[in-house]
Each structure stands twice: as structure tokens, then as C-alpha cells.
Image 1 (cartoon, rainbow, N blue to C red):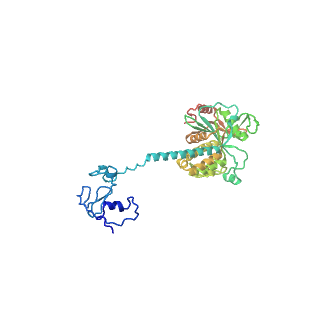
Image 2: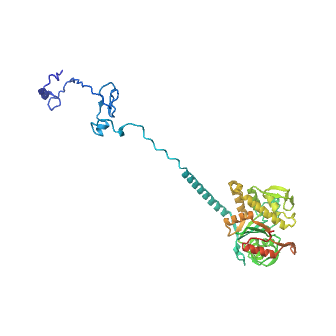
Image 3: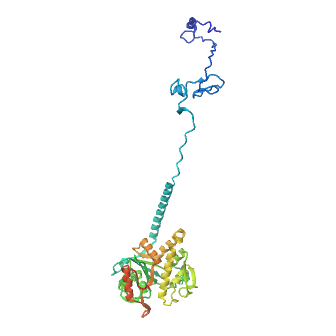
Length: 427
């Protein structure tokens, strides 16, 4: 047992101290370290009631002992040792800094993006619909093949024809629609629709009108048609829409800009796709030839009933003239219902109606969808009239015919050519 520290001398330190370079490798024995007490120091302002350090980096055993200073507190290491006094304001703990408010939702931007997306969708749908509809048009009549044509006037003139074509109808459908079995094509409806800046006018030309059919070279047959006196309907039967348009231009001296034709089957499909057309009758209508049989009052006519109503004429006092008035009224009503919000805003009704109508039409080679739309909208509020007539029962070798009042007819055509307000036939 070593007698250190009482027996330790400087000589012993030099001769036997381990670790000071001597050759003796024997380790020293354990020695007891004396305990040195220190006087208590007064509590500084930085200590709490238990003597715990209030300065970061100091800790206490909370038993009244002197706080232990690690030497790594913020003041000694980072801001210089020996700093006295309270920490600077920036070092004092305090409430957490307030968080910045969350940005408000930018509803204006969201609405703008939504509106832009909606516009893009509508543009895509409209473009697709346009090309779809344009591809369905049957552009088959070349009006440029007509000879000796009048000069174009102001406004636009549409020749609208309803033919009795039975093409595509089965025997059962012909019987149901009372179309008969006649071969060839004739016209039950012939109208000129003038669309202009001074009002729109729909002028019906009775199919039994007595006219001059001019010389004509057949567009399809190549045959030379001699000039002849005939009923207007005969021109269509001889050489179709080309000779009909040529005959009208020749007799009325008016330029036909566009041609539109619809047959029996197409007419029925359009009405059925629309869901029917409501018509009101002041008197009962019965016609065995067309199949029309309606009591007085309002009726929702389907396709077959609508065709029967438009073809009936034997109950009318003035026969063919009465039928043309009925046809004008029906077409105006049909256009109104097709353009109603219930149709335009309902894609399940709009697209079937468009499809049926486009499939049913035969138009000229220059007809565009915009031209077709213009014609359709003009039909709704057009002034309706028959061509001025001098004798509805004019006797000919072809039977009774309708003779025009040429003085009033020429005045009417002059107003249409110059796109003037129509006064002929207006009471």
C-alpha cells in the first residue's frame, strides 16, 4: 500500500513515477484522492430557487449542489466565454412565431380554367358535329349545268321540292303511307323561298301550273328535250330537278341559287325523329286518297299522318292551291318545333332529327351547311303566299291547270330579284 501523498518526495517522483519515461514498467498501485471542499457560492440571478441554472448549457442535480457548467453553453462557445448577465432578447425563449395565413382559394382562376375547358369541349363537339353533318349531305344536283340562266339578284333563292319518290319504301310501308305503286318521280310540293335583308318570302308554285318547258339537254340522259307546253310537274317527271329548275328560271326570270328535295320516306323519318308535329284544324279533314282522317281540333301528327295531311287536296275548295297553303303552314310549324329549346338543348332529340333530315335531303353541289341552316331559319317566319293566279281551272289538253296572273307574277319576281319588300298578295 503506497504511502502517497505523505511519503512522496521529489526524488521518489523522479525514480518511481509511472509514465514519466523511466524503464520501470510496473504500474502504480491505487491511491486515494483527497476531498477538497469549496465554500458555497452565492446564487446568481441566472439560477432558480433550487440553484438550477437558468442559462442554457448548465444543469443541476436539484439538491442544492453547485451547478455544473459544461463549458458548452451558448454564451461560452458561440458568444465568448465569461459573458455575464441575462441573455440577449433574441436568446430568450418566447411564444412560437405566428404562421403566415394560408392563401385564399383563387376562385376567379378556377372559374376561368373551368370556363376555358368548357369552351374547348364545345369547340371540339361543334367541329366534330359539323364534319359529321357535312359528310351526310347528298349533293347530287349541279345547277351550273343549266342553260341560259338569269343573272343572280339580291338575296338568296332556294327551290324546295317535295317529291313522291317511293325509293327505299317496302310494300308494307307503301300501303301504310298510302303512296300507291306509281313509278317514276313527281312533285307534290314546289316552293321558292327567298331569303333577303327586307324579309323572307315563301312562294308556292302549284304543281299543275301551266308553263312552257324550254329546250333542254338532259344532264343524265343526254337527250335533247324540245320546247313544249306542259304542267309544271311534268318537267320533274321528264328530267328530274335539272329540267324543273330550268323551267322555273325560264318562266319566272329568276335565278335559283340552291336546290333542296325530300321524298316521302325521308319526310316521315324527320317528323318521327322530332317526336311529331302539332297541328290544329278548324274543320274535320278526310281524304281517302292520301289517308288523311282527322277530327277538328289539335293533333300531334306522327310521320305517316303528317304525310297524309300534306298530300290531301280533294277536300280543299281550290284543290291544289289549298294544299300548298297547308304545306306552307306545316313546314313553318315543323321548323318552329325543330328550333325550340326542347329540341336544340336535348341531344337525344337533336341528333336523331339532324341525322334523319340530312339523310332525307338531296341538295345542289354548292349547298353548305350554313346555307341549309339559313333556309331552315328563314322558313319559320317567312311571308307565305301562292304565286298570283288568274284561273285555277284553266282548261288544257292535259286537263285542268292553274294559269298564273303574269302581270302580278312579274311584279312579284321583280321585288324578289331586287330584294325589296314584297307587296304583291299582301292585303
